Amino acid sequence: MTLSSKLTYLKFIAEGIKFLKDHEIVHLDIKPSNLLFGFGIVKITDFGESFHPQICQKSIFAWLLFRL
Image 1 (cartoon, rainbow, N blue to C red):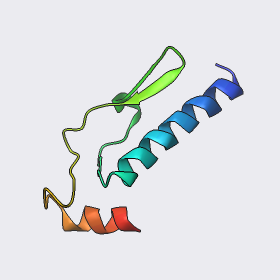
Image 2: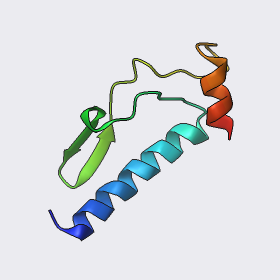
Image 3: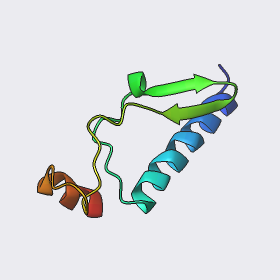
Image 4: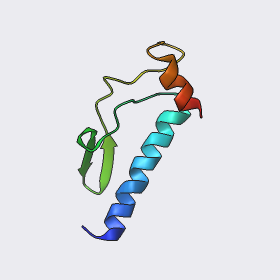
């Protein structure tokens, strides 16, 4: 994999995390096994540990960290 490809994938991951943050979704489990790579894009998966702070008070500590 070229450096250019790695940087492109990193950009997609950052855009996905920004999308989640913009929609106040806390994922809590971002790791390589929860990222799907293919066809030149990356998808973030496994939202089982995620929550929206206005809907679910799963962890006030995680919500506070998310707001930093």
